[in-house]
Image (tube, rainbow, N blue to C red; front, side):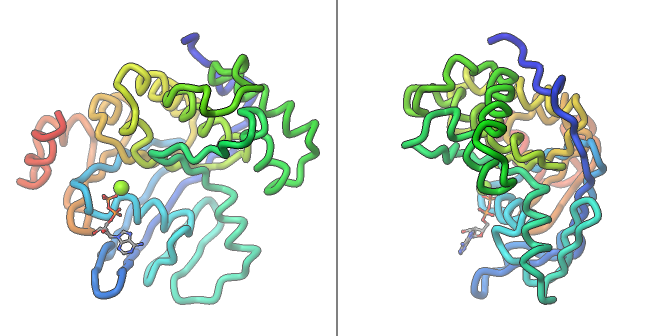
Amino acid sequence: MNAPLITSSLELATAGVEISHLSKSFGSHLVLDDISMSVEPGSVTALIGPSGSGKSTLLRCVNLLETPDAGTVTVGSQTITAGQPVKDRDLLALRRQVGMVFQSFNLFPHFSVLRNVAFPQERVLGRSREEAEARALTLLERVGLKEKAHQHPARCSGGQQQRIAIARALALEPSAMLFDEPTSALDPEVGVEVLAVMRELASAGMTMIVVTHEMQFAREVGDHLVVMADGRIIEEGVPAEIMAAPKEERTRRFLSAVL
Ligand code: ADP
Ligand code: MG
């Protein structure tokens, strides 16, 4: 794959993400227990921890796919406080600022690759079809997939589909991006293509929270590493330092399983 130059035509309006005293239960199960976390504008936070520790729920609370029970989420200048009435306008404004990429790419199977990237721009940003498709082509070129524009996603490899999903999220001009295990459904060799795109996005100054088991990526690209277990942050700091000398036994156990 040619190294994609995602950024040359993207003006990133990067924002910080602040999570403060966030809690969330499903029934009687406390899944997030008083989580506070600060992601500086333009920085990359890697989020790790055993399955079931609440990583996905935390990301889903940041763009309000889940409603937190307590706490606040701030993206840029937009704050949502749990338990307080939220205007639809504010909810949409916050959601619009946050792009999300999932493990399963969630592309529209009946749309071409181009329409996958263009359609949300028309619906969410009210762009004309011409404008949205022009921008979609630019982004597809940036992720190395312009030649796939008129095919259906099913004709693309998993790694290509994930790069399309990233292009689709970027087309909405988010000021922060959330990635939930973006490479765990992929073979390692195609996962590399996706990580390369993410690496470039990070160096362009995108604010990112990345749930991943790719510890090399976390060490090289992450400015900050957060370790979760049982709905709490058990350890955080400089990725290389935590990987070299974890303070918590549970961090040590998790790292020895993934490294
Ligand atoms: P992780 O991403 O770290 O594996 P999750 O955030 O997916 O963890 O899940 C944390 C816990 O919350 C798990 O025990 C999971 O079963 C539970 N959970 C997640 N989503 C829901 C839901 N919609 N309803 C009930 N329980 C849920
Ligand atoms: Mg998860």
